[in-house]
Length: 259
Image (cartoon, rainbow, N blue to C red; front, side, top):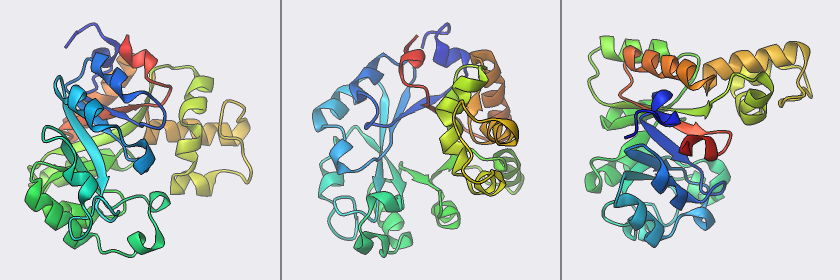
């Protein structure tokens, strides 16, 4: 890994990519050892050839919703079974936006358990299923929030010695307008932020007054934002609190992360 790269300066251990937003094959140039590929529906799943090529150089993890047809270990798992052997998994319940009504009704816990029997090294996404995920004992994949540092310290103090990966949208600038353009809408959807925001408030660079203050404070809570050196201080603090791996999602686009 190049110590002078932007990613290294920011202290990121892994990069998460959204295949609907970028050419996943470009990740071959990223100076990291782990690439996590988010699930945005079957139409955006990278091809087997792309995944095979990526996994020849880095550790590749593909998010797979265990309630969805094609990934269901208790039903149709044809898509999951077709992933290259070298590709790892992030097991998640599955975002309702990408599931049918029938898929949403499927039980999560037995499916996580069944999937881990065949992929014991998988990470488990904790969003909406925190207790179930913790019960698996697998690597926990948490979204950064305002309580993450406290929860990490509490887990370590309680004796949890498993791996914990923390996922955060990452903005490598201290320009407030660019931060809001990159993550303003994202943080506005977090429940405490949505409750605090005035009705119909702008969430991007045009946000003003109290709404702007709330969104910028939320960017500190739910994202990693600042110059690479400032972000590095934040990633160091997460690891000091107990995180094993910090995963950054390039909220401004992939280009800055390739420098």
